[in-house]
Length: 497
Ligand code: GLU
Image (cartoon, rainbow, N blue to C red; front, side):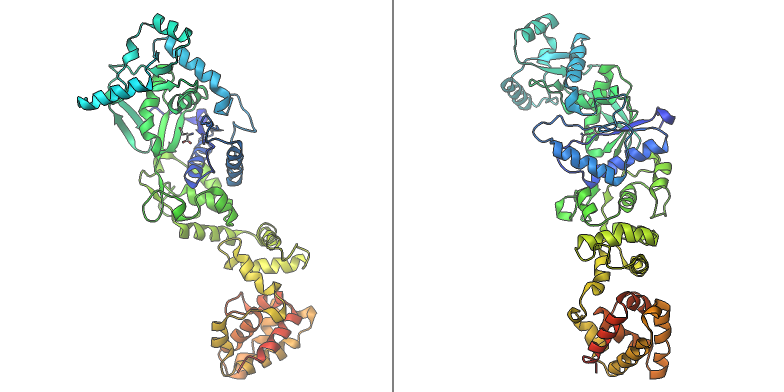
C-alpha cells in the first residue's frame, strides 16, 4: 500500500445501517476494521448510517450495539462512548450534508438540477433509442447559469443537487488493498445526485462527507460497495479531501456457493449467540473467513487477531461459510476453558436456563467434577445439557436407548456383570464415593468374571446413564451418587440376561 497513512494515525470505521440485525458478513467487516485499528495502534469508529428513515429503527440500532458488545469489538468513538468527530449517527448530520452540498454548489463543483422525473425518463428513453453509449444523466442543468439556478431555488422550485464530474477526469483508479488497482472509466459516471429533492443526502455523498470529516484513513467494507467507490472518489475530489485507502472484502457465501441467506441457516450474530457459540470462537472463525496470518493456524485468539491482522493477508476470493469448522473451533475454545470458568459461564447458566438446577443442588466440587467430565465432550455450550441429563432424571424415569440395551444389557453375562458391579460398589461408603475409588472397585471385575472390559463396564454405563456413551465410568458414577448408582444397577439387572 503505497499511499497508506500508517501508525497511530490510522482511523477506520464500521458503519452499519440499522435496517436489520447484524449479519455474519457485517460482523466480519466489523472484526476486520477493529483488528486493523488495534494492530496499527489506530482508532476504531462506530457510526450508525441511519439515513434511510423507512428502514432504520432504534431497535435495530440497539440490536447491532448489543451484537458488537457480545463480539467484544470495543469502539473508541461512536454511540455511547462519544468522541471528537461526532455526531456518530447520520440522522444528526443532515445539516452538515446540506452545508457541504451547498458549499460545492458555491464552488462550482456541484449544481442544482431541476429536471423532473418525467424529463429524466424521457431523456433516458431517447438515449436508448439513439444507442448512445452514455445512458446516464444528460447534464442538462449543468449549463444553467448559477445566478438563474439560485433564483429558481429561492423561488421554491424543487431541485436536487448533482456533483459535476470533471469532463477531463480520466479514469478513476481505485487503489484497493485487496483487489489491487481497479480502474473505472470516468466517462461512464454521470453527474450523480448527492442531495435529493426531499432534503436528504444520497449514500455516496453522506458516507464521504462523514468519512472525510472523521478523518477515516482506510475503508474496509464488503465488495458489494466496490462499484460505488468511483463515485465516492469523485466526491472526495470535489470536497478537496484526501482519498482513503480502500479494502473491499469478499462476500461470504453458503456451502452451495450462493450468497449467504436464511436458506443456509443462521445469518445473524444473535442467532449464533443464542445457539451457544462462544464470542471468542465466533470472532476467531469469522476472522479466518478471508484472512489468515499463516497457512496453518485454526485457533487464533483475539489477542493474536488484533495484533497480527493485516490487509496483505486478506483474500480476494469469496469466503465459504463452513459450519463444521465453526463448531470445531467452538469446541476447541470450550475444551481450553478452565473448569471453574466452565462451571460458571457454561454449565450453571445452561442448567438454570433449562430450569433444572439453580446452582444450589450440589456443592462446588460436584460442579467442578461435572465440568471436568463433560467439557471435553461438548462442542457447543448447550451440549452439556445432553451430557448431564442422566443426573437430572429420577432413577425410575431414566430413558434407555434401545440400541444400547440390545447391545449391552440383553446379552448373556450382563446380569452377572451388573450383580458383581453392584456388589463391588456397595462396599464403598458415601465418603469413599470418588471417581478413583469407584474405578478401583470395578477394575478387578473383568478378570474375575473372565469377561472383556466392555462387557462389564458397558452394562453398568447403560444401567446408570441410559446409553452407551458417557465420560469415564468413575466420573460418571461419582456424579450420579451412591444411592442412584446402586438403585439403577439393581433395576437394570431385571432387564439383563
Ligand atoms: N451503511 C453502509 C452499509 O451498511 C456502509 C457502507 C460503507 O461501509 O461505506 O452498507
